[in-house]
Length: 307
Image (cartoon, rainbow, N blue to C red; front, side):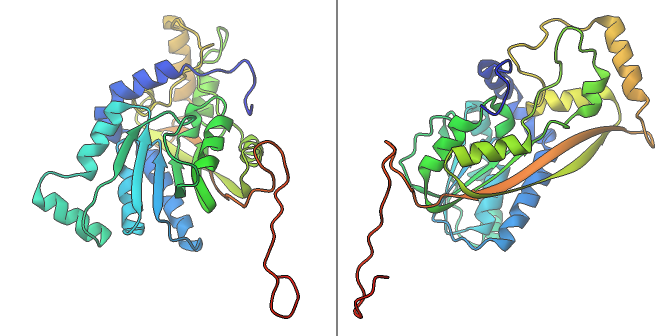
């Protein structure tokens, strides 16, 4: 596991929160939209013509539209564990009005086909082995306390030569909030996985040549309540099984607000996000699933030499 054994996420609570926030999610996903733009820019430097693309953790479908615009000939599949999120996604990618449909066709340069949408958990993808050319996942990993099973599933469904593109958040995310909230009763801010741990898990899952980088982004808010509201809507608040169940009390909250207020600059409160972006490839297998070595035989060339 990439995380400590004392850190386990309450997946039932996470799903409940995302279900409840689906109708409002687009109002609080500014960070995900900016990261998606940067992930898309990375594809400018990668030669790939995928036939089938999956967006794991597709949410309300913004990234599916972006992928459709870049790869208009590809088949798109969106997967998410929240059915209400997928319902919002369905409304976005299959517009009912002719005007909206024509807009999408101009955007993608091809007839609007929408995308297949599937409700599924990341560690049990209902897709055949080697059936996907490009796996895309924007900020899904922070919802997992152990990313290995999900990355193994992504490796399984990718074809040889297939590409995984992903983003996540690192431990310095929300450091201002972490410092402000009292921790006497336990961690009150979500714990995020370190970039180097993600790299180790990618290799363990079977991926080849992982490339990752990290940068700090800062969003600003008019007040602490707006930040906390955005975290609730976007699923960024703490969902650990070990999280404190009670509030920190009126005195504790007053102290936290006062601490955060001291960070106000030009009338705004900062919130730091350690953004991790990466990609990795599925290389030909060197061993079978039971550990036996894979030996490749190549046909002998006409001059008697092997290729």
